[in-house]
Image 1 (cartoon, rainbow, N blue to C red):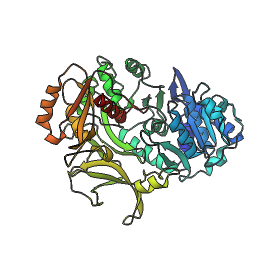
Image 2 (cartoon, rainbow, N blue to C red):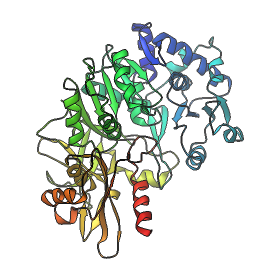
Image 3 (cartoon, helix red, strand yellow):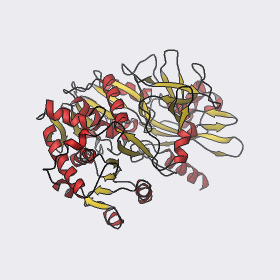
Image 4 (spheres, helix red, strand yellow):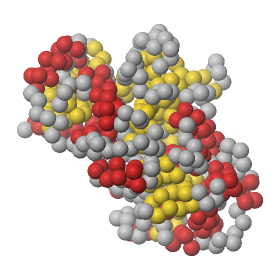
Length: 505
């Protein structure tokens, strides 16, 4: 059972069966109880013909049932496919056709229930029904045959203008990444991790794995829609770890949720999924002086790449860390030649964290996952632009397709966002390009204010800190929260569409 995700559950039932594994809706659930309920789900799946390699789509909100179903699927050597219940119908239709699930588990009240019931050759069930399986079945012999190469999950990237892509994850890759992250962050049995991130989002999903690998407790919330409740939850359950995305941390700062909150147990905060501005980090440090803040970088195609090993550092304020142990990276130009320190290029990743490509999508797989003749291994071409310093720290500059082509220059939107977020009164900012007949693209910034500021004031600071081609030509100011995707990231496509619509009226 080495390099098997299920091993963590079996190990915890052996060494701390009565320790709390999950806290959900004020109920504490032990590792023993998780095992018992996972076996119920596994029995139901087995009775319905789910076998090794079969895909089971989990269209379930953050809940204890999600965790039972995940482990129950793995007990059958099946493959779980987590999908956000709020997904739109178009993308859900694509995912179902792409992964052809043997079974779909969702909630009775789901808006997708009736349509899913019409599917042929697919078992569709309410998540409550799945807990009625035969608990007398012995899954241990089947689990003993499980291997690190077994397909464990297909995690779909968040699709916007294009359809989502299903990243294929085997047991051994999940195990490697989880152990590497816990080694840096230091989760143990004494930790309690608060998660309101969608479990369909790989960042949220891996909080389950980090918890069970360490023997910690997972404090599970359906979402973080009410920021004011977060400090109370942290106090009530002595939370020590808090994973989030920059938009959430900005909302917490704007709502003053952490001001005056005494949270001595909160050991760390992690952030990934979008640009984590220096201004946001510093405000969090002021409000939570005893908490270590870990900026990180990763993408679904390989989960985690880097973490700031000792948390945020003043001397490297925009760094996203060093590669995790066992992971090698290089930065290359458009001709695939490695660039010098300080020069921006595409990040290429090599290591045991590299997933197995995209499910049923050969074209995108061969574009991103490329065989390297020198090493004899497949390497991941991230599509993200970085530079690194002489110590090997990585500095994120943005998605390759998000770079703005203005007057023959390539402008990093991340660099402009970092400058904007240093301005007093700016809560967060989104920078992108919009078409322009003369310049190709012009730089546009949508700025969320925490207090009223003038465009001219913003422009003056930008002129002092940015080259002329990087200065925003269009600046839109708002007090409203910037739109977010279902995973909590800033929705740049929605903002661009809104700016273009306003320009046409």
